[in-house]
Image (tube, rainbow, N blue to C red; front, side, top):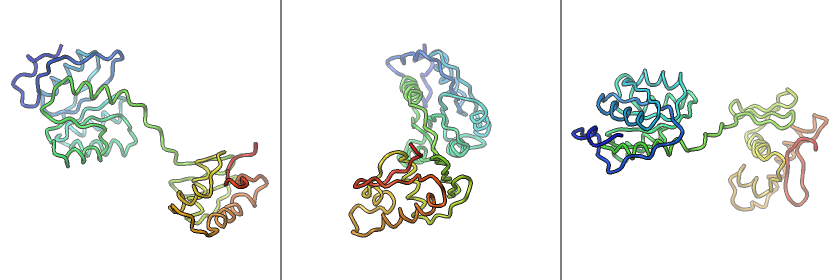
Length: 251
C-alpha cells in the first residue's frame, strides 16, 4: 500500500490519511514525468492499485508512445525536457488522439490551469499532491464516456455534404451552394427525418431570435430545393404544412 513512508520528505507529495479505493478493472496508464522520485512514487502507487503504468521522462518520447500505443489515461508533467507538456498534449489532440489527460505540475496559477485545459488537458492537479487525490482523478477520467466522433460528412440518400471541404454533391454531381444555402442544408441534414420549423431555421441559419417579417426562409428553401431536388427524380426536401421543413429519403 502507498503509505507515508514513500512520501515523507518530498516537496511535491503530500501525505494522505487514507488509501485510495482499488478500481475493479485495471487500467493502462502512461506517466510522463521527469522527476525520478515523483515518477517512481506515482508508478508504484498505480501498480499497487493493480494498474499497468508505463513511465517516460522526456516529452518527445512521451508523444511518440502516446500516439503509438493505447492508454486509458495519460498523466503528464508540464515542464518536460525535449517537448513541454502543453506542446505534447496539443500535438496529441492534433493527431486525433482523445485519450483523457491529467496534467500533474507545480504550475498552479489560474492562467496555468486555463492554459493546460485549453491545450487539450481534461484535468489539472498541482504539486504537492496526495496520491489518493491523483488516483481519484484518474478514476474519474477513466469513467467518462468515449468522446463521440464529430461527423465531417453528412449523408441523406444520395445527397452528401462535406463540412470540411465545403462541398455538396448528389448522385456524385457537384452542387454549387451559397454560404447561407450551405448552412441551411447542413441544419436540415443534421435533423434528417425531423421537422425543422421556420423559427428554428431563423435562429440556426441567420442567428435571428425574432421574426424579421420577411420571406427569407421561404426564399432560401426554394433556391435550395431547385439545386438539390429539381434536377433529380426523387425529392428529398419536403414542406410540412403549417409546421416547417423536413429532409429525408423516400419512405
